[in-house]
Length: 144
Image (cartoon, rainbow, N blue to C red; front, side):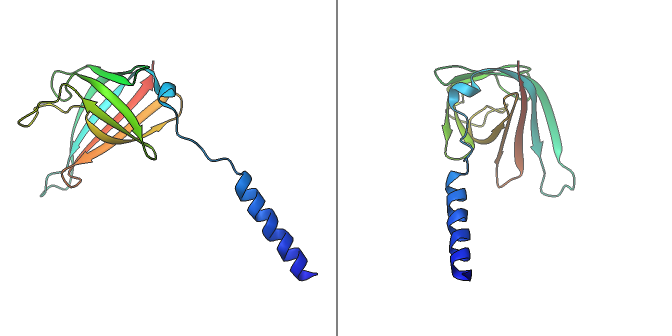
């Protein structure tokens, strides 16, 4: 009797796991639209105990054909840019900025490369880093 009960419990556990809903990442069309919010450029120098943070208010437009553009306060910290994007594995997006300089080091940050993202239908948050985690980029954007 004990064996039958354990077998049934195991069977129910397998069935329950198979029926559990898996949260699929949003499709690019769900992300379409215009977003406004803060961009944070966070740099932690090697000998510092506190990071330096620069901020800008930007607007990100994501279009149906998976194109993007960045406008807003692009005078000092973040560059105005445009290009295309794609959703990659997991919860990451890759941006291909067509205005990124082909040589040299850009003076301002461009939305280019791979970013982790979360989207709850209202807020789009993007995070990325460079240079062995001494530079961090955070976008906290609200859908308009």
